[in-house]
Amino acid sequence: MLVHSFRIFKGRIGKRGGHLGFIHYLSIIAFCVSLLALLFIDVIELWLTSLGMSKEGLHVVDLPHSIPPTRSEEYLLMPSIHVCQRAKPYLITLVATAPQNRKARQAIRDTWGGEVQIRGHRVMTLFIVGQPSDPVLGKELVEESKERGDLIQGRFLDSYGNLTLKTLSMLGWARRFCPQACYLAKVDDDVLFNPSALLQYLNHSVKTAESELTELYLGRVHIRVAPDRNPTSKHFMSETAYSGVVFPDYCSGTAYVLSRPALLKLSLAAFAIRLPSPLPPEDVFVGICAHRAGITPTHSPLFSGGPAVPYSRCCYQTMVSVHHTKPGDMVQYWTEVHSTAPCSWLGKRTSLGFCKVRALLGTLLGRDS
Ligand SMILES: *[C@@H]1O[C@H](CO)[C@@H](O)[C@H](O)[C@H]1NC(C)=O
Ligand SMILES: *[C@@H]1O[C@H](CO)[C@@H](O)[C@H](O)[C@H]1NC(C)=O
Image 1 (cartoon, rainbow, N blue to C red):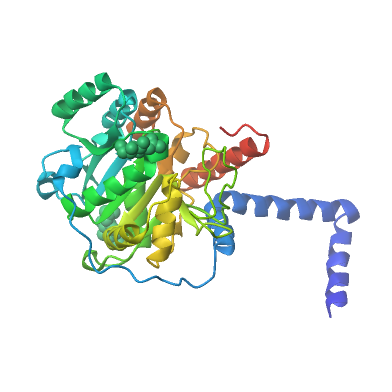
Image 2 (cartoon, rainbow, N blue to C red; image 1 turned 90 degrees about the vertical axis):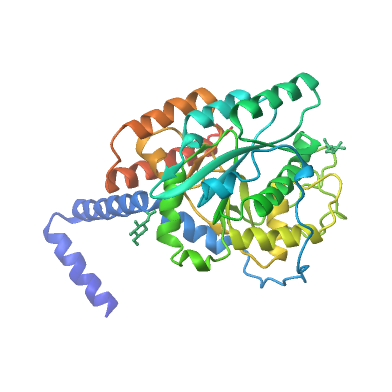
């Protein structure tokens, strides 16, 4: 049967010019396949990631039923405790920032962080910092907080090794002072975030009424990452701190989103974990807590977190987060992306395809930052 149809196929092609005709057909097919792959590169990425994600059942540990409420004394600086009651944000974005990164904070306020209403939803952006070792910086933060009212400062030394404390501080603040928010986004201060694209994603993908939010832990999922056992490394993790061969799948810390129910459950799990020293990386820690709480991460190709995404207008209109963005570039990209007309469906698809391929080539050629 197969041989028979092959003969017919060969016969037909033969009439059209033999060998050359066959190559001709092949290249048309190859072209169409690559075009489709380019247009639906995010679907392919999603599928490949889901193949790689850990399939083992979650063995959920017993979580405490409640934890002590967050006290306002845990924060040295914060906006009015009524800030969320007044603004009623649907989405609150908390930006993890270092005391000295004033320029980055200003760029965010001047761009995506300045938005208050998007696609019919209220949104709010605040910054979370620790304590600087330099008292001059400390005073400047107090001034900045008085002026802008958008800083939350936890009681811990602001350092790379303490990022997990920053996240715990952030979760505690959101839990206690912002119960109005349905979604919490944690974003780094070098990320060009696109709340509009996120809200669109949530509207299309999370089809539940607001009254029954599901547990969502969304971002760029890192799969099967092994702990770094080199004691001199910045990400060192001892066997006693984490004994597993690989970490549970987790969302890249550059930008991830938690729904309110996920935030509450994750906080319970975090409370039950004894923090090792040195602390695990922030995103790994959140992944471990999510795993213990029985929450699986959801991957979205619209979050960057791997290779840097080269700038292109329609691609940046589509992406939810792009990291490694300098403050000056952030203002320029945002203005370009938002002062021009929305890209067409085809424009967005091709642009996303091209910038993903370029990002991938950049990594392969070793130009990743
Ligand atoms: C969400 O989708 C519905 C239709 O499914 C639409 O009516 C609504 O305006 C959308 N909301 C946002 C915020 O995009
Ligand atoms: C983290 O913060 C605590 C409390 O401020 C401090 O004692 C500790 O030295 C900090 N750790 C690092 C690695 O900076």
